[in-house]
Image (cartoon, rainbow, N blue to C red; front, side, top):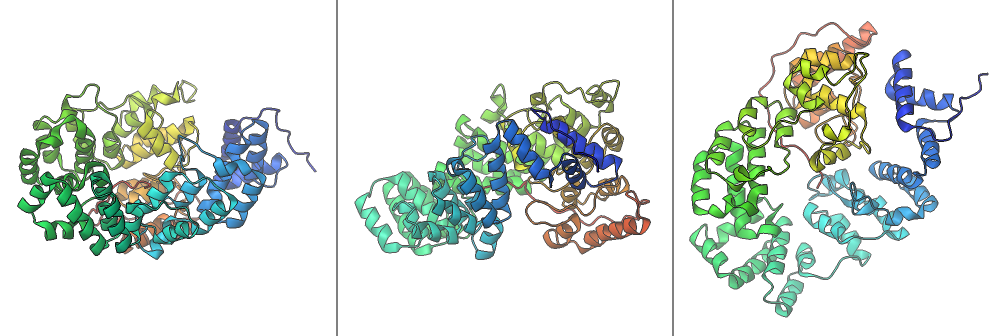
Length: 541
């Protein structure tokens, strides 16, 4: 029997990952099977055991434990989480400013989307893990309670109230539809407009009409300008109905106040539909939206318009000379990434009036500039990327957040290669994609627009059969499952996109590959692409 390999005193995680990829490639294994095989060569039962030993030797044991705890929370594995807490008590106060400022409790309670009904709360949060953390003594950051309000996680709010962890303040009384407590609090602190507005937004978020109506009356009484806007506009009842009926985006409503939130929602809807008439009318009436304090909203309008292919709307907005167009240098944005991620590169001549396209490997690949792509590689074929902070997804705070969403904890050349592959495939530059695959890009990368899945998962929502066919022809693993829903791309097509034709197309590809017994079947007959559907980039709350 062959003796196991020995790890060096200070092993390299990057080196081990490369060894696992080479082993998988040489033996025609999936990457995860190659990782297990390599771990066993070093005398460990599995990949995680090998990584744990490396982390211990490098002095990163708490970071490793935190990563394991996050995985346990994601999997709702309370037993494993308790094991880790017992072995690493410091996890109860663990913080990572660049990733999870609210700690593990924030990770367990933070909703990926609206958690306003029991089913969605089960999808997006982990109540059992949250309770285990609370009972073990985890620190409760104020942002955790605020996150519960924003996501409408009623079950977790009740858990926190039962544990005595919620402050007795107006917004939390509103969240529990406690009319009498709200009345009493208003009597005690009748003139704090910001507090009243915050509670009003909270009551609207939970659709509690009686409490919202009471708080709206107080806001109107405290703010004559607000009263005039409401009375000269829709009127009080219609205004309240819009807030309760989710016609108003409440994301920034606490920050800007109810009236400005109402106006901004109208213009955001105009950006979605390309309604330049509403844009011109509202900005003439509300010129404050063009000022420097609202550059972030001007950016958001362009991002919405980019995603929905509303070039004329973007031009109309820029022609009004908002503060965004005058700021130098321009503020960081995700708009350019939206264009690359959702195949809207024809909008770049307009978008580059504000933001330049970064000069890095992923963007060169997305543009189809094969000559520029090749300059990022040595003659031997090895990547020559230089400082990874010069490449997406590590070039600024926005991009690094996308990397964290993909659970890419530290920069690697592989990540940059994989994003470049994704951009080239999405934008149909297949010569570039082939070059990248020949030079180390991983066709089975977990890259996706928001959370780990695959390029194929992303393309499902883009109706991009040509790019999907390219990936199928090159042998992409059709069984890959996403991080949150544990579903393959066919499942996304069937259950998320409601596109049975696409789901069957993907399943046919899987069956043909199984019949052939090889990774790359002959090209499939492509059905006519169904009408494109739109979706917004998803983000954690």
